[in-house]
Amino acid sequence: MSLNSSIRFPVLAGAILFLSLVLSGCGGAGTGGATPWSWSTGSESQLYVSGSNGDWLLSYNNAITVSGNVPPNRTVTGGNTLFNGPRGIAVDMARHQLYVANHGGNNILVFNNVRTLTGNIAPGRTIAGAATTLSGPSALFFDIFSDRLYVANTTDNSILVFENASTTAGNVIPSRTLKGMTTTLNAPSGVFVDITRNKLYVINGGTIGTGANSILVFDNAATVAGNTAPAHTISGGSTTLNSPSGGALDVFQDRLYVSNTGSDSILVFNDIATISGNKAPDRALTGVLTALDQPRDLYFDLAGDRLYVANAGTDSVLVFNNAGIITGNVAPNRNVALTPATTPYGVFVDVTPVVAGSSAALDGEAGSDGSTASAGGAPRTGDVEEFPGISTAYRQFYSFDLAKIPLGTIVTAAILRFYQASVSGLPYDGTMGSVVVDHVNYGTALEGTDFAAATLLGNAGTLSRDANLGYKILEVTGQMESDLNNARLRSQYRLRFSLSDANLDDNDDYVQYTDFEDSCCGVNRPPQLAIVIKP
Image (cartoon, rainbow, N blue to C red; front, side):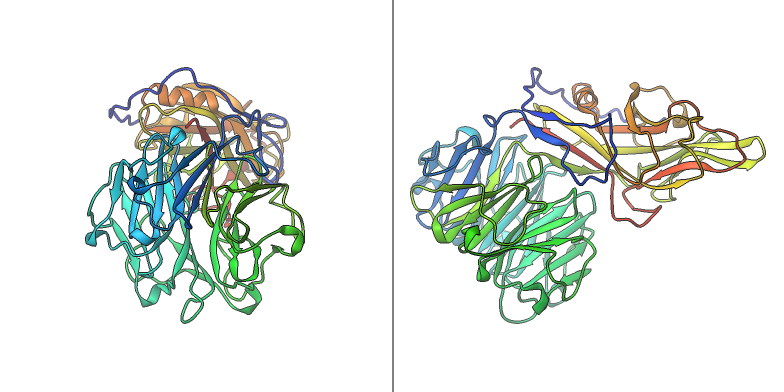
């Protein structure tokens, strides 16, 4: 076992649980169709709205219940703010910072102490200047696990990436730039990253020329740069894309919501990581009952399956419940009338889960014979019979990077989502038991000795009791607290059968859970660690 001696600081004690987990049967059957989260209270959540008309930032308490013609709890406006047509916003909940794509100012504004932010207050930092190449930025995506900011640089037809975003300021060169004819970027107005699939999604808001009215999908989101072609493009008449301007991503369901501004509708595309071409949306919200009128930015609340819409035409934020299934001419469940009139563009809700992907180099299997396989190799949990009465047992391992989670972070809820993609033989016949999860610490390398190495907590919970394929979930809030409090750079887990790693029936008896590379089964269902951060 190789251990990393790097130091991390412990988190503050006394976390308040404001999200509760609803886990059916200790880790569950099902394919992830229902969200495993439920709200225990709405008092912790805040709704943030940017307004490009009059240069406002509005904040509302109780985001999951606020409705009607109610004044904002806080308003940020005035000359000190430097607002000039603010559009997309993103919140770093761990560092209490809010990023604003200041479209008219060609800069990014960063405000501190976001939950108490009010009045004519200056930003704590500004990313601005010729070296930044910022030109009409419209949308942002902040990756808290990598401290990385993605910018849809609309006027320059580019995507900019700033590493170490939490400390970046001034006239700095972007860490990476995605730009050029091959990219087909055309007035990009939305940018999203699925960390677990390493995919970058861009909504092209341009209506004329190459790439007009399209969704671009780029592989290798963590590194893609230059004049690189998208891996997939969704475009054409069947898509019904018409001046799209924003969107929201459901990483659990691999689903993209798109605000179709030109047609006053919301389009929904399933399997967004793999679809391409002239693909019709799987669903659409459209019609007079929806109250959609020039929808701009969207925000998807993974915890509550709610979709928030910045509705520019009526100066409101619309909220649709059951976003994963609703379709057609349906009324919003809530309508927040904005005062003053702001022509809203950006919308964000805090206190919602963020989702990390596992580390490809540290995912894998270790065998009872001392063998290991990582970075691919179709790992297994169970036994492989080599000769009658002789078998090799295997256990799967997963590692999630915590290195960029900052000092003072409080995680109030966490779940693992592992996809059981294949079952060989009869591993669930009762002899081997159920698949359980050990909380371990195998450091920077997976080694053969990790098969039977000591645990931080043996049998932290049951992941699966049956051969049904699909996502299996397990609460690991305590394990995350332990990792953070003990300054670990990674949260690591081992899968094994509870009673025996082998049943010696002269047949292979094992299960396969997907790894980051999807090396076993090609099902596009990666391992995921979803956590809720107290802002």
